[in-house]
Image 1 (cartoon, rainbow, N blue to C red):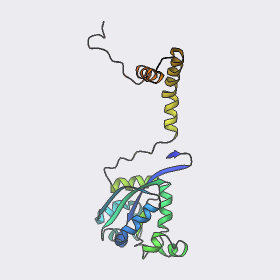
Image 2 (image 1 turned 120 degrees about the vertical axis):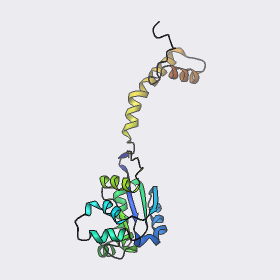
Image 3 (image 1 turned 90 degrees about the vertical axis):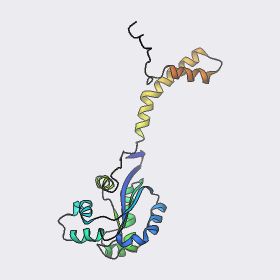
Image 4 (image 1 turned 45 degrees about the horizontal axis):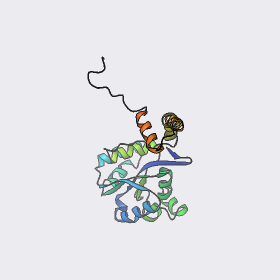
Length: 207
């Protein structure tokens, strides 16, 4: 979602696959230098059944059995990454899934550097926002994925709730002309806070 105009802060799931596990530190260094924040990270080894669930969208493809066998063959590193346009940016860094294409057209991408075949291609990245949410939840079940606040939300709140009260307070301040305007205004705002609950003494409400 937009945080400031023109910037789309997103989360994406990145996986360092079993064939590139020994290069995890180098790959994580690329992650950091590329402007990502690593929000979550875990090292684990998936079972074939878990791999089937993770790649459920690939079920039925001829390579599916080989994919689940490979992804469960050793430890992996799963990371939740965040930055502006995280999904597109991470996918541009890892490069095409086809290793031949990666080496020919994107020789500096991670798959060209560390992958050895279309199957053993070193790294994974979410393809869409919905895919990222599903995959992050899969790898980090306790995740609470809230949208990043938009720039419009605080501006709308200030315009609706804060500015009118502040304007009234400043108007009263000009009328009163107190000796200590800062303390006077602070007290006025506390007393006239529209979000402050009305407090009644017990037993007074029926008087």
